[in-house]
Image (cartoon, rainbow, N blue to C red; front, side, top):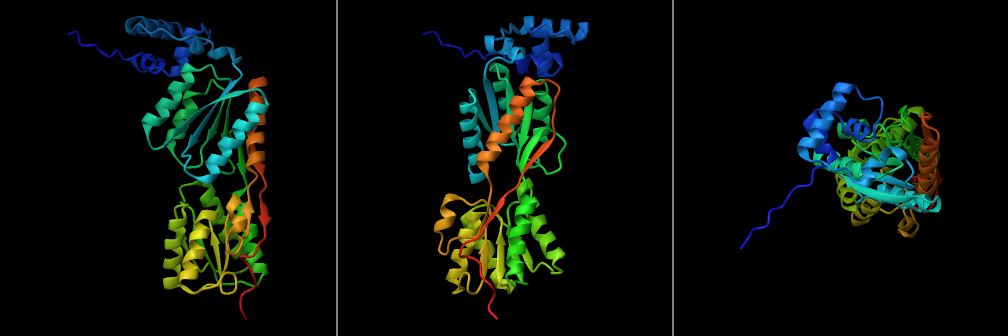
Length: 340
């Protein structure tokens, strides 16, 4: 009986690693780009021959930018925000005549980033949309490795100078906190999202800014985890140590858990404590009571992200800047003036 051996396919990343260059340098050599130094070109060609690397048609056509295909790379589809971004990007891309390939990565994992890069080398993509909502130097590595491809980043840090599209999370949190202050609330707690997320940090800072502008001190803040279970636990912890009449919650799922915890303790919403969320998920209008929240226009985010990417694809060298989408306050039944 003859045992079959498994032969590992040699990839462009393998060639780059062996030659001590970036994968885009390998791509330039394959596509006869004039910007590669002669000694570097010769070294890469020697490695290609030694490894018996055979670039596929997609990789060879990478420089042509004529595939009508874009790549969407995102972090964790487990949460509402990133999922809605992907859904709306895909819909807008399809309407614009582009096919989409997806990579869902864990930015703390080098393997996930390398796998995403490898997929880009094997497909002839015209551009990349990178949804990068958390702080990680792995993203910087990915951006560097795909620097030859038009790229727009989405949901990154506010104020970034790279081509990007964001929702003004700071503004959204500030106006919803100001709504509570305008109702007469002075003891306002917060359940934030995980503060290593850019959006969660911006929302936390917006809450602080609104209180500061009103001459109020923050009562207390607990860092949550975006889940209803996390919101429930955080609300119980706040009630154990603090008195408050209003609660600013980092997203609608955590707000649902917080309302459940308040109800469990016999605290009525909004008669005893007003509660607000963020995102305006479809279910938020049907909470008991219906949730006051901030609406993010994910459809506009997807459209704007794609528009910016197409502009980069069609106008080489026009790098653009950061485009900011303004969210909207949605007032429902979960907020009311505090009891006299």
